[in-house]
Length: 315
Length: 261
Image (cartoon, rainbow over all chains, first blue to last red):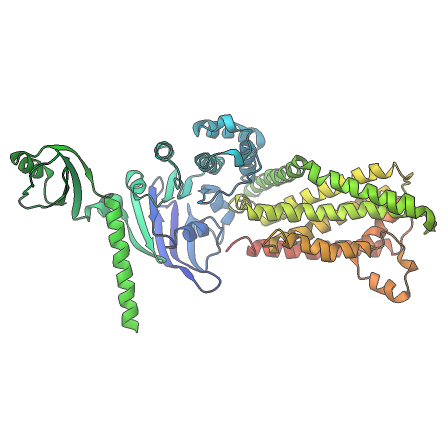
């Protein structure tokens, strides 16, 4: 099977000796919606930088749709579209100029580029701003402009490095819809994000990178299945009696809030029946934290304690 | 077929970079095209009309006619250099250079695009200055092909120099150091205002290592038919410098110096 992206034994040591990537392996299937998660400085942006040839790798192999970036860089590049973390367009150029020039770098002629620019700017609700200088746009608009720019040559793989950072909730949700739509059209999407909820909602497969090492590489369902306990918050009536929940750990947070730990093998129905029996009315419920967030913290902590043990052992 | 496709892609990419570059300096024409016109007009007034009339002849021509080719060349050199230096550095600084680095644009196309942009600005300014000079002097043309070849090659050479400067630059100050400390002295000592035959023998020898002497003299030959150096040597020097600077620029961009971490 030909993968959209294949990375093997990728290493990156920056000048000064900092090793950002310590031999990572990663495979992304065609048509996938893939999340690359990790804390700040974990190596996410370095990985993306190497794939898109903005960072020189130290060792290892990267293939995009079977094209090795060492041997067929130009072919590999034609498959990729990049939405970087930082704004990296000429702030003094108009949106149309930015898009048409970008298309030109991929060999798309002006006439076709203009058509595509119109399509992308309309889809991303920027058409009215097409002749404005890019510096006049809001942060959210600038992010959308970078998405439009990345799509001008119709790439098969779209890489987004924290695309919704600093974007308000409404806009974030509309961007999610847009990305889902692109994925449904067959574009492979690789996403790095700090919003774990975003990864959980959008992505089918996930890799977690920490300290230059892939600590988890699996599908989202399997990863979430490893979560044993979830904490739910229940909003109950004012001055409800103290709840006694047999088989569950429950905590009264305040006069109208209850927190209950529910194991994977337990059902929520039991919680509700016991509360009803005790005359406690539940008005609403929500998860205490994002499930993926809990897993993420656990995996990163496990990895860090592992590495400190290794260091202790070496000493 | 693949080569054909790639060359079509390269051609469109080159056109895009050129379009971007020309659009950039035309958008800010008050900063890019007007100042050289004003500066050169002042040179014409002060050195040509006011002081020049007291100097008399140089190389068999009145002083004004003698310095005009050098002044045109000076503005070509400065503008080709500064156009690429500031445009490429600004692309680095705003990080929009990444737009080209992630795209399948071969490095030689990037170099050619920026150098082409610098050449167009340099030659356009040269043309503006030439038109202004007509207000002060009746320009004669000895050999138009020498004029065209010299101005094109010189602007290419200094555009390459500006590109290399921008690749190494880490701040806007870094792109003004070379023009201030190297380019301006070399230009002033490059025979723009005098014939190097007037210098003592030792300084004539020193002037031979200043590449700008060859460009100014070849250009002056095109207008007046006089030169302090052989035309063949002048073109050999210019072409050699272009070859060296092009190789350096290509090596730096291929290695990603100042561009890729």
